[in-house]
Amino acid sequence: MRTQVAIIGAGPSGLMLGRLLDRAGIDNVIVERQGPDYVLGRIRAGVLEQGTVDLIEEAGIGARMRQEGLPHTGCELSFDGDTLRIDFDALVGRSVMVYGQTAVTRDLMEAHRREGGPVVYGASDVRLHDIDGPAPRITYALDGEAGEIACDFVAGCDGFRGVSRASIPADRIRSYERVYPFGWLGVLVDRPPVSDELIYAHHERGFALCSMRSQVRSRYYVQCGADERVEDWSDDRFYDELRRRLDPAVADRLVTGPSIEKSIAPLRSFVAEPMRFGSLFLAGDAAHIVPPTGAKGLNLAMSDVRCLYEAFADHYGAGSSAGLDGYSARVLARIWKAERFSWWMTSLLHIFPDTDRFSRRIQRSEFDYLAGSRLAQASLAENYTGLPI
Ligand code: APR
Ligand code: PHB
Image 1 (cartoon, rainbow, N blue to C red):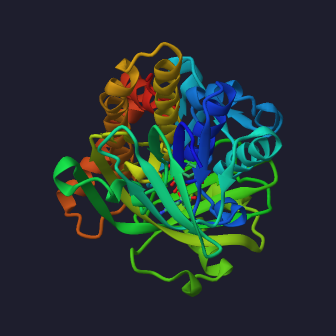
Image 2: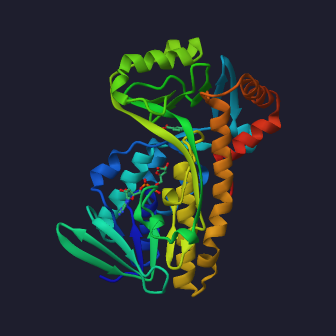
């Protein structure tokens, strides 16, 4: 098989890139290790920046998001019982859209099925060849048969543990990492959310987050130990812990029900740079990870994909390599700012097991500063709703 762009990974990055290339008439094939149901089963954050909303519209898959997405003009922070509303609209004139990543992935998959290029699901032993030259190839196995794709470029959209980043020689890529000493235990439940807006809560027992997927489906999280097991958390234990970390008035409003998903996610900050090696370009989680505090993961992936798509469109349309040459530097500038913001929000809101008394007071003083400064709130709102590319 021959194509112009071979895309590794059919998560949101790979599917969105494929979709944009299809619409621009640029030939592409997506190769995915898992099946579509597995990809859809992963529950991730659900807050879209305006830039992500715009990209979804431009990709022609915005109909359901427009109907079912919930525009949010602010969010709430709570710190040891004191609360502060961050009014995005009043502070920076922007808002966000609450619409789950699973829903975005489903909308992309349906569009691909209707009118998209080929997606090879269930490909094993995916390997990249000759990526340091102008004629790279992908090989894989599918149902015991060998497959090969010759292409002009490879887009590595295969997530943190994918094969693309690992195919770059170690001396040509540099990574930066911080692993946090805790995780998030999340529960999805078909009950109305406790509040119209998201609540991020710092409490001496640990962080908690009240989020939602719709008016009738809620997503809750509590900070837990990095090595805890989900089997040790019954629904009752989870809700008890959540209630203790929320303002009593909010806790009283919590409507509980049987969890329909429960999982523990580790927290990590990670960046690999540069995001290009020869004819291989990395996008999304393949190159960077943020902790979920601030919900930047999907938004960063989408801004990478927008830039990469524009670069390919420039290459095939205007014959210019400027976009491809500038891709890595352009996206990394934004990625590092989102890394900083996610790290900062994580540091403010969590209990770190080895925190001394001084650091606890600094956390408190950070919150007090935010509460008393419209400029500090504007900075939070500017970052939360999304910096420009
Ligand atoms: N070969 C083919 N496909 C692979 C391989 C491989 N060797 N390794 C991984 N994949 C696939 C995975 O099965 C997955 O479907 O690549 C896809 C990567 O998807 P994601 O991990 O969702 O990454 P991305 O598309 O960049 O989406 C970023 O996901 O983790 C969240 O917070 C993050 O919301 C952000 C989004
Ligand atoms: C979620 O709804 O899953 C969610 C929302 C906001 C975050 C993280 C996760 O910061």
